[in-house]
Length: 418
Ligand code: FAD
View 1 (cartoon, rainbow, N blue to C red):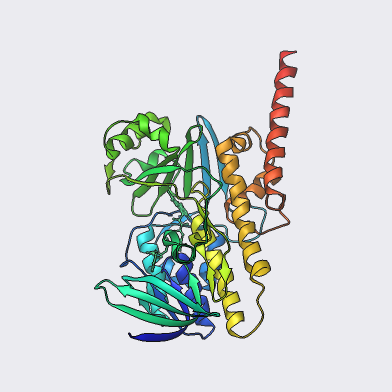
View 2: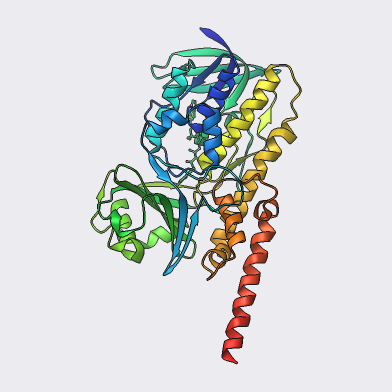
């Protein structure tokens, strides 16, 4: 069987895989990427966060992305009935990028992959990893191409960026259940001719439809808008008919979307995704590191997926370089802990969103400006800034703030009665 020798094998050409491959290649190592699909391919995850720009910049991708003319994103808006909470990334606590993009992922991921290839990193498309054998940190990976031919890749190190494919956790039984409830999304791309009815397109809008059910509205520069409903799987059962009938009934049921999306043309039949939350025992081992969705994926509400993918890949790539240079790497403190710091901060916000704690905070009248800026930094993806109390003490800070707001509201309303 044919065997090729590389320094680093990267599994998957999504954002995690391409960012890691590019940074390791820039350090002078021989890198190869294997990708199961042919690009462009559809994947969900269209709203980025400003913190992802730092990783994309270090990977040398920013110019290639700029050329695609994607929609620029300056903030995130949350809507509940008549209440609106608008975050603008310029008004954030942590210094950093104040904007990012809203992208059709098929085009975005292809732009990253093409840019990587132009830098000299080969990507083998329609090539699936079927087996890996480790001998110390060296490994032999077996791959199969679309015609069923198998070959082997000998590598000094493997970066697993296989996303929902979760190659290494599946092969080595590292998978663990997430502590988040299973949820379902019904979504489509719409030809958004009445977009001028809203103050868009340069932000994502998340609309609270009912407790535990929300809608994403992500406008693209092409005039197409991604719109999806997320909720408990049972919620969708009350709507009869095909997925398109359910989708249109939901658009009609929500006052925020009713007029703008009535009879809207769909670019594709509505699609369903569900039970996406997943996690892994540990994010590293002798000869490999897991990045992006393979580590842990939480929930779409705060658009954290691509950012966590890019940042984990950026961190992992630097440690792989260190390891290849023969320097000691403490994967637990240098990789696992910082990665979990980011994931756990977002986990607190995801839980607070579904519990309703964030409704109390987001939709209060006259919010405190400093607190708003600190929360805005989390929504921009700056979840490693320990000087931000809403990062450092994420879970308690949110609960305490919501309790204070509720108590103040109660006191105010009782003083009004008197
Ligand atoms: P991926 O982008 O999934 O790339 C992994 C690649 O690995 C794929 O191309 C795949 O084909 C390849 N692969 C898989 N198995 C193999 C194999 N055996 N051999 C070779 N290659 C393989 N994130 C956001 O940032 N913003 C959002 O607005 C957002 N919305 C979302 C909405 C929903 C409903 C869901 C479920 C997720 C959303 N996400 C969002 C999350 C986002 O989809 C992921 O976090 C992101 O795509 C992860 O990137 P990645 O590079 O880790 O994996």
